[in-house]
Length: 476
Ligand code: GLC
Image 1 (cartoon, rainbow, N blue to C red):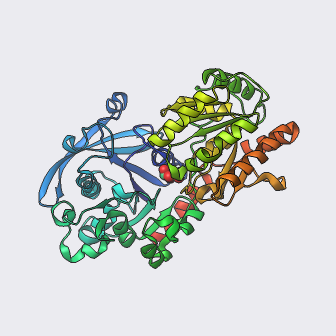
Image 2 (cartoon, helix red, strand yellow):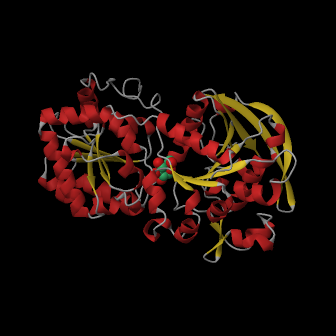
Image 3 (cartoon, protein in one colour):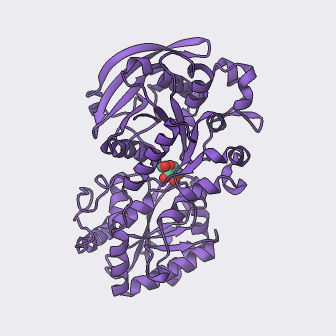
């Protein structure tokens, strides 16, 4: 079986979020299970030189973008046993940042078209193309409109994975013919709420739609979560599958992580106390071994539950012996909230407004509790990293958080879970966790159980393979 994984970012080359983690680890997990899997992504300016230096030029082709024809260089590199293709066009990709340009519709229309155009040139005819998020949503659309019957392109199935339904690729009507090159008679495929919606096009045209947790697959049928796509998803619900993401357990291992001052694992957790003391020092907090440290590593935006945190954090700091460490950047409203509150409570709250992966590791390693109260969370990977690093997650029951964290109230779970999206319900749950922390013996048992949870790609990679097989047999 051959799978081409089309994606707009992948670790270690370049990443802006969880999508990059998945594209950097799922393909290798598929390869380990003897599935031919290669990845294709844009050759961005921001990819570090050391990777560019190792890329091999294969050939160049021209790619139609509506009535234009654009150069596309094809490069190749190997990472973790997987071949990654990089598609080059300096006009589109030699820029600062990877998304957010005025012509993103055209940049990713070019990329999606190029993914298909390159197939005859790479000696790898895929059985399945797995596309991801709106940036590659046009691949299934172009395939079904222009390529399905072309010699050399027969019988390719397309799967489209939604990592976050909030970002759909919505643009004005005017791009349909002139940028996307799609004739008016097909425009209903992409129309949604008076605009062009690339994700909607992929939901219509792909053979399967997957999303990154079973709970999220159900949630997106509901207007509360769907950002306007529930109608079309309900109509196409027969082709939706929820498969929980895994994490790269080699790159994210407290026993091998070079960012930690001392390594540890579930068998010998003694190093965690050193990590905690170092974290307190690094963040300018008093070194108190018995005060629980709550960590947060997150984008500072409301749907990550920041509005709940803003509502009750001061109450928590005033009434409990606790330290809170926050790493992230995002909305000005939350950045200033944290900056002001940490100035008021310098011994209890430490904040770093940035994204520093090494510090993220040290927060997973040095904190006792990890707070992730998201309003919606397609999968979420941080709670899995936290579990592995022995930081007990407190989560709201949504999407992948619901599917990976269970409440320890019954002496079986691996964290603390609340249902209702409400600040005081969250505060009550934090208090439950702090009580749990004071029971030293019980906490050690809970932490060991959490650290032993298996969120590697094993099970999920097998589910992808099952789905691909179904698609190839035409059974979806
Ligand atoms: C997006 C989602 C996140 C998910 C990640 C990888 O970033 O918001 O929940 O874990 O994609 O699928």
